[in-house]
Length: 309
Image (tube, rainbow, N blue to C red; front, side, top):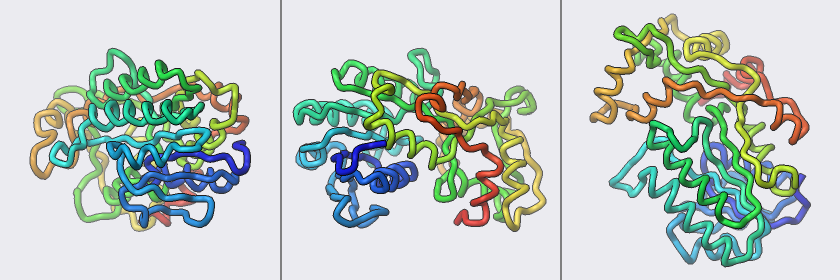
């Protein structure tokens, strides 16, 4: 557990995972400098949280963010590119990490905790995973005492993914619940995944700050249950109030790739590619090193399903 009063710099504090990490740090007594384009969106306030207005390319904001801190927790990432807003995988995952690392080293920050993703590897097919790998390499070569986490899909009541699943089941549209499948008709299956509870992710990030055994470690991070996409959707249907009587339908991945990124299409090619890969891992090491059991998906989801907005 982090020492009470430790100064920690946090990026992504207004995002889904970052909000929970910020809360976990505050509960542990840390003082947090939280970078945010709009500090009013920060979920926590008070003497323990110092908002730093700016973004990852604002040198003045980054210098203020890391000054006098004992650790940086870098959460920021994107799942879809918006080039017109300057949000591309290389810029956000690689360039921003390089800039923040530079400021951290200049300020003498000793510790770095990094958010990557399960499936990140040097020969990755998706640009998302390629740029996550490049960012990991920057961290490993930084000279800082680093820890890298690679989560599978992260679930929680305030996350975009679970809001999407709720819309699939409870909204009028789409008329069926889709997933991307292999083969001509999409019936050849897709990748499996291990949904990991956001509170468990936040606990790992917060505890890693002062847990010496995690230095130099890369942790795959998934829940204890490996499920297919149809299985995940079926579990969610059982516990979502007002779920409609829809079918789970496979959309051929080859067709999804053809239309990915077109106007009005709510997914990109990288998301299609990643859905075909397994996002699964062994959990024994993270449970041993952090000293707790990762939460099972269905009972955890059942506990918050009614609160998904």
